[in-house]
Image (cartoon, rainbow, N blue to C red; front, side, top):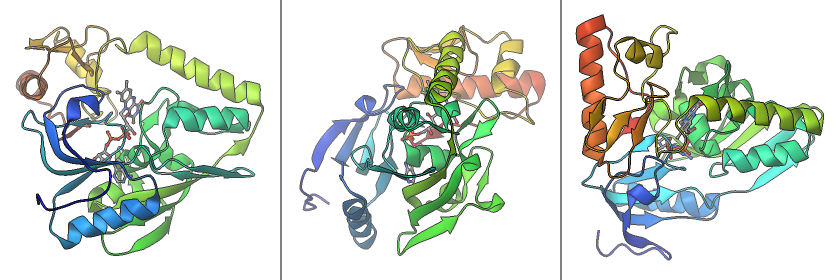
Length: 289
Ligand SMILES: Cc1cc2nc3c(=O)[nH]c(=O)nc-3n(C[C@H](O)[C@H](O)[C@H](O)COP(=O)(O)OP(=O)(O)OC[C@H]3O[C@@H](n4cnc5c(N)ncnc54)[C@H](O)[C@@H]3O)c2cc1C
């Protein structure tokens, strides 16, 4: 492992600087390829040499442990080309959703406004089938180019490749390379105001002034986990520097000095209390390593 050398590879990189929750130890190795081709080369190398790796987008839905990651973190943030042909956008996996939305506003393309304010990348959004305000990314995905670990393939969007906060990519650990989105021609002003309205809703309902990882738990039979947690009076519950937000009970906020263990312990406490008092088994939406 120590002999492994890729140009631009960094060593002992704090994962707290690459995740929105701002917790987690160091990545032993950290690399940011700037093209799909280099991305695939690195994964091939890892697979061939049995090196542990993890694909990281913007880190807005991941909690790494305090012990860090003993392997290679491959960040996609520099794989960020966007092409637009009429109402079809071809987007590299590392494109930030905020940037994509800005380009769609400029091109008067509607369909992805529901993601305005989700601090993720295109790859992360497709992997998680990100959603908000009764829309999911699956509604606008036309096809996806992905890497199986052996082959690069393209899959068309059929009903079977996505489900609630899940995808064929997540189920099989496939790596998303490029995404084709089918959008609708609209008016620039309308796309922009849809985006801004969605952002406003988030600013009112989410504790965005503190580091967080978005919704911690999935809905349970369509009922929001936040409602279930709030009903039990758990807002404000703390472990170390991690706290159940007093604004939104499905958010854990880092009040400044939380460790990954604080966050994980708080998640376990909430699950135990909800199980004990309501007989409901909450399931994490956030990816915990
Ligand atoms: C303030 C806030 C608000 C949020 N609001 C929402 C919301 O409204 N709706 C919602 O669904 N989510 C929301 N989230 C969660 C999160 O932003 C989304 O799930 C987002 O799509 C994750 O993208 P990411 O690039 O940050 O992924 P990461 O957190 O980096 O990774 C998440 C998972 O995706 C995998 N992954 C990332 N890129 C790839 C790739 N190219 N190929 C294969 N796997 C990949 C990672 O390995 C990991 O398992 C919110 C988060 C925050 C902090």
